[in-house]
Every structure is written in C-alpha cells, then in structure tokens.
Image 1 (cartoon, rainbow, N blue to C red):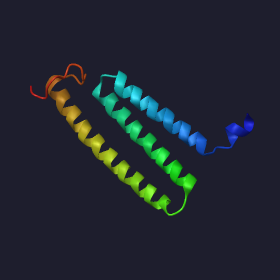
Image 2 (cartoon, rainbow, N blue to C red):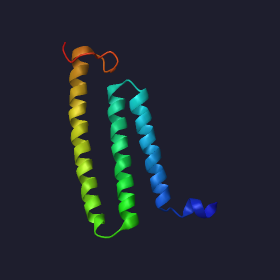
Image 3 (cartoon, helix red, strand yellow):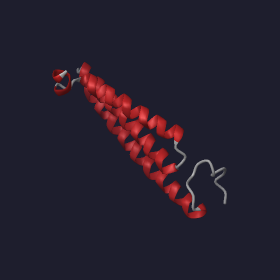
Image 4 (cartoon, rainbow, N blue to C red):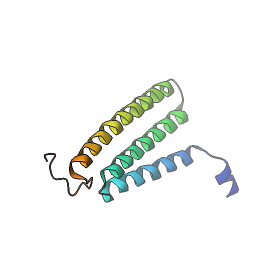
Length: 109
C-alpha cells in the first residue's frame, strides 16, 4: 500500500486525467451557468493534454516532441476559446443580466 502511494507512475497520471475529464463532463452536463460550462470545458482539455503527455512519456521515442507540440497548440486553442467565450458571456450578461443557458433561447435582444 505504501509503495503504491509514494511511487508515482504513469497509472496515477492516467487516473487523474480520467477523473478530471469525468468532472469536466459532469460539469458540462449538469450545470446551467455559462461560466461553469466554460470552466468545465477547460478542465476537459487539460485532462486530454495530461493523458497525451503521459502516453508520450510512456512510449518515448521521436513522437515525444510532436506530442508536446500538439499539447502546446491545444493550450493555445483553449486560451483563445476561453477569451472568446468569456467575451460572449460578458456581452450576454450585460444585455440580459443572466448567464443561465436554459434561459438563453436566442442571441437576439
């Protein structure tokens, strides 16, 4: 038991990645606040990056650099998605004083 806790291996990172992705999926499915949904999507992207980098580290070789490059691209896309999503959320909140996705039926005022 002690050896399993203190010797961190690839399985620990993959389990953590799966748990993070599950929490993100539950957050997208259950929550109705647009900001929480955006945060859950970011959590899912980070979990996918963690799994990608863990598999890259496990298998090594020349694919390791391409996996790290792909992870950096995903981080950049996630940052752009967060900024655009937050800007849209702020614009909707200013117009309607509400960011509940169930109450938003159209983007018109």
